[in-house]
Length: 380
Ligand SMILES: Cc1cc2nc3c(=O)[nH]c(=O)nc-3n(C[C@H](O)[C@H](O)[C@H](O)COP(=O)(O)OP(=O)(O)OC[C@H]3O[C@@H](n4cnc5c(N)ncnc54)[C@H](O)[C@@H]3O)c2cc1C
Image (cartoon, rainbow, N blue to C red; front, side, top):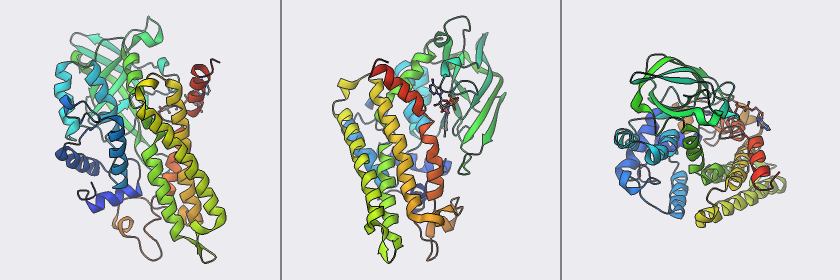
């Protein structure tokens, strides 16, 4: 990976920022695809590697070590497993190769203004009119809607049954007439989030995945698919390494911050907890079958991993002190190089810290995860 990643792309990936440049994501996906690693976690028959979970784990560690991009998330990692498991032969043939090659990017239209944690309450409707579904409603927090050419949507197709039973899983090209996308600026200045308005959006009947009314089941499958990804392990390990690197370069009273006892203790605390998180993930990967369907474990990893994101990025911020506050966005040449007054390890620190506030919200909030643990692990 290190031998094949372009230096400028690796640098932008190191700095971070949400979302990454689409050109970078496309280029990196092309490089991986050429090597046969376009979607290592997919079954071999669809272009995956068929690796066991431990191999995949090693692969992901190396990808992050090389500052490769871990993106294309919504397509390769989320909608693809659903299409593989429940989609028609035509859908597999049409969509999977274009995800592998990086030609298609996907966004996830689940959340609505009144349906986040309470997703089953979603109101966006789709009605069959001849051979077309007509969609009306609104989605929100849709990551990368503007960069994506396809979206997968949860829509209500039957309002007369129990909320979970009336939901279907529909695919729509994002340039379909009637779709309006409005960006939302996030706390660190990124523009990856969006509102998506759907007004008489017509898509072919065949864009339904599986059966009508089964969308909730497919969405649950999608969310459970990457069980251990919820620990954000690879991100956390890379960011801790960066925090240590920053601390080794910053000095206090003439000694490196990494050797200053108070800061060293902070680092050790975070590192010990991250090691524990890693062993929890490895235990699950190693004995994966025994914890199948164990939602409480997944929720515990999500809480541990998302809080860890906030802790490792806070450590970086602490190491820089006030210098981290200076705005330092973008992907311009200054971000690449750094200089004597503005060392290369500063860019991105404040933005990563700020964006990590969202980690305890997306993918199911911390409170909702705690409810799941209370119910499933403790029977409360
Ligand atoms: C950066 C980011 C990216 C996102 N990307 C996407 C995307 O691509 N596609 C998409 O569909 N969605 C996306 N989301 C939306 C995300 O899934 C929701 O924000 C999340 O599910 C929470 O829903 P909500 O924002 O409506 O908050 P709410 O559900 O309104 O929650 C508000 C507060 O109430 C608490 N709360 C809610 N219910 C309970 C309860 N039963 N018990 C205790 N406390 C409770 C919550 O923990 C939270 O603190 C993204 C969100 C973020 C922040």
